[in-house]
Length: 120
Image 1 (cartoon, rainbow, N blue to C red):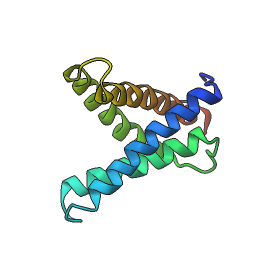
Image 2 (cartoon, helix red, strand yellow; image 1 turned 30 degrees about the horizontal axis):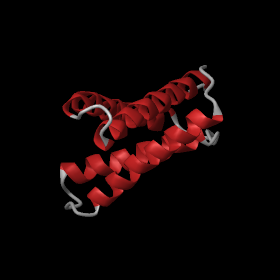
Image 3 (spheres, rainbow, N blue to C red; image 1 turned 90 degrees about the vertical axis):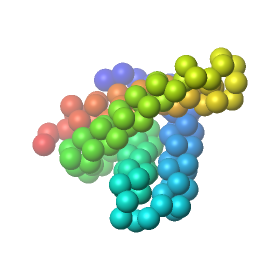
Image 4 (cartoon, rainbow, N blue to C red; image 1 turned 120 degrees about the horizontal axis):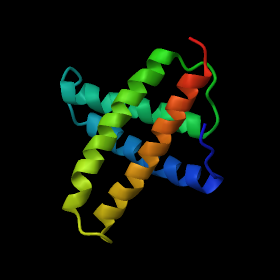
């Protein structure tokens, strides 16, 4: 498994926490039965799981939750990768997406590592 420095994990934690906060805020403006609401809630849950792993708290995370988080965060990574080119390098929007992409890659690596290290 890849080892990350405390600085890398801290930066990733901040970026994932920001994504979680934005998803949580957006879900509050949506109808609970809508697919958009469910998508935002999935983002919140996946971010919570990723932050737990970054904090070293991997106790009793079921494989199905790891798989759901992996799918949700992979979708977020693909969306971020698709929009980063729309922003001029050096702008706050570009920096946000660059940091988010790096954090999502770390989160996905931690999820994959946890998935591989635990027996089903």
